[in-house]
Image (cartoon, rainbow, N blue to C red; front, top):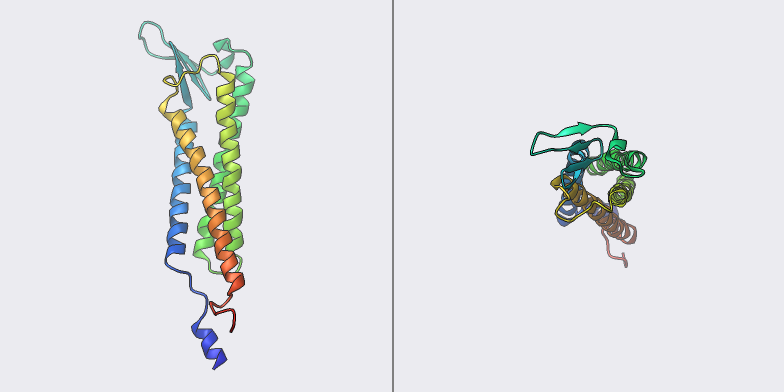
Length: 197
């Protein structure tokens, strides 16, 4: 009787748990896409007739087409070339870390083995690291160009990276929280049975 009762009450996740996890994965995927587009484009600040980017520095004259240079020293901003190398490296690393985190989140949902909760936790932790790196890249960019930065001068791709950074943080915190709740429930009632049983 006891064995039959245990077999009938194997752990079944509620409908809300996989739905929430699917939303977290969707949010994380959107963050990776936004950050990738923002870094590949790289033009984050328009100041007067100059366009500052992670990879190039561009100037315009008399509404003519852009003249872009890869040598950021031509912008005549102290420390811009070396500082921008750090900013783009950190931002790019954030995307790489987030891709590995997203892979772990997805694999943890496909496989139902006992280690799936651990994969989810590691994936969420990687997204937290991606947030730190991404926000560090944004902060480095703004610090380097603090004398040229205006709210209206920041481009759409800059705000895409800012949004991606926020989504990295949201995915990480939500993922860790959901995983801790699920883990606590499975430890407290491993077979979905009342504590008295």
